[in-house]
Length: 413
Image (cartoon, rainbow, N blue to C red; front, top):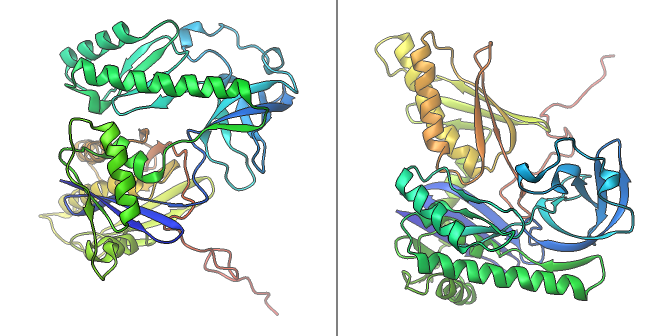
């Protein structure tokens, strides 16, 4: 069973997703600092850089957005030219263009934007110019994949493209059709507004954090939603009424004196899951270090001794670690390159078991993740896409003295 726990304070909304009592996702958002990912802007091209095959676009933010040449070409690979043209042939300084944010600004970098437009709905993702129908890879039944692809081909018009989401499995035609009508209306509104305003201008915002998680990770008929704010309860019910007109499980309003996160064990799980050292069942440990370029996870047996021999003990430790790493990568929203230093195993069969375990847990993650395999040094490589970063997340504050290294330099006299 899934439980979605929402804690609202004066300026921050925090959301925790529990599966059978275990915390699997967490996010937070300040009221005045909603993320940019998914939002549409009418921007103005400021610089075109042939050497980088990219352009910088003013969308009204502090930093100009970055637009790479691949995000200007046709979204369907078969429609792209065999030889990639220069960015100068596609864009000119001063040109006005509608772009969608695909990656948040971070550090000294501006947002990453694209002209491969997408509008996610409950059952599908709408792409106004993609010209193809795709079906989620997580739908395994070939008969159902064919049915959904056929529905998509019948419903799409002209240059439209559709991706049928995992939750559309076994859904009737009328539900899918209603979702498409709503998304078409959204796109028409964006197009109409783009003709009425001057650049730079915001054309369309993505949903709030609660609405986004209801749309993407919530089953209205089965899962439980608990919120500690009467205003947020009304907003969630209004959104659910539009999204699930066939009915939904009532939204719970938490009135307890204790914090809702404490009452449901979220606070304790957050502290344990976001520590540098994570203790697993039986005493094994994970050491989790994040750098600018990659995340390194070290697996140690520590006090774990369960097993009939050394190889068995090591394999069981690594399997426990793989399960927890799969959960924590999703929970901590770790992105980029991830290197896992599992304990050395002698048998290829055992390495395959560990990889299979990790893949089975990661398959529940909505963010695209690739396990690349084992290196010659016995390290497991994987990558995970990360588009958002929390504006009010559960993040450590870097020490002003050591800069987060835990060490302060001294000169030897």
